[in-house]
Image (cartoon, rainbow, N blue to C red; front, side, top):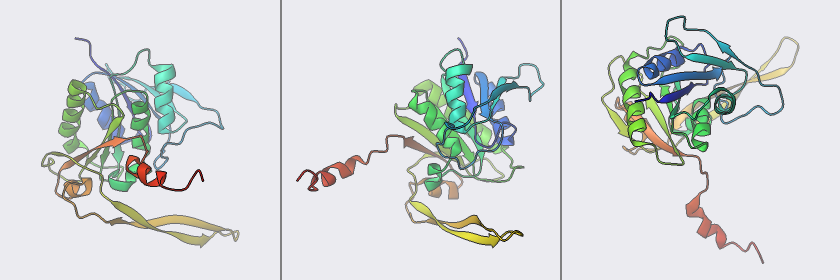
Length: 258
């Protein structure tokens, strides 16, 4: 049978160790084509390039025989997927995988995630898509213990499909051992308690660094944060229809047309 075509991307940049790890895993499953940012694009959310020129070029990073085709892109993760689908691939991929991100994209972090924006962009185009993240921000993070879970989730997604209008947000705990298993979860309720660290430059101009603490507001044992804290890989089915359907009846009771 023909191997599945897998589009691989990320937000940490085309040379990121997490991406290189994901490529190696995907090569065991199918034909891989990589389209990734030429520099880090973390925290970009679903930004796209509309007011400047977008560049892309084929690059050779893996010198080994059988290495996948790889393209760097000057834009955001969402740009990479758009460009890959419209200009680089000659057929629709069977799945798009994004990551492995250096750092968590669990709970509210998914809102800001460039990793997940790439997966969502593919999902919008009707392509099964998964974003993978390791809860370790270090550039030297060890991704070895993520392999089995990543491979299993992708193979199952290819075999069974992902519900339309849904992408998967997968987070892998930081651990030296194999995860205890995989749990399908809901997104934990949490936020960032943020503040700005205000400083003054040598020229007298004020500038700011965004800082903050993660605040978990959810005690449920069916959430991604709980699963990760217990040593499990979390899988959150994530939809990109942002309509709050439950709120429509209440707002219809407002006197909007009087």
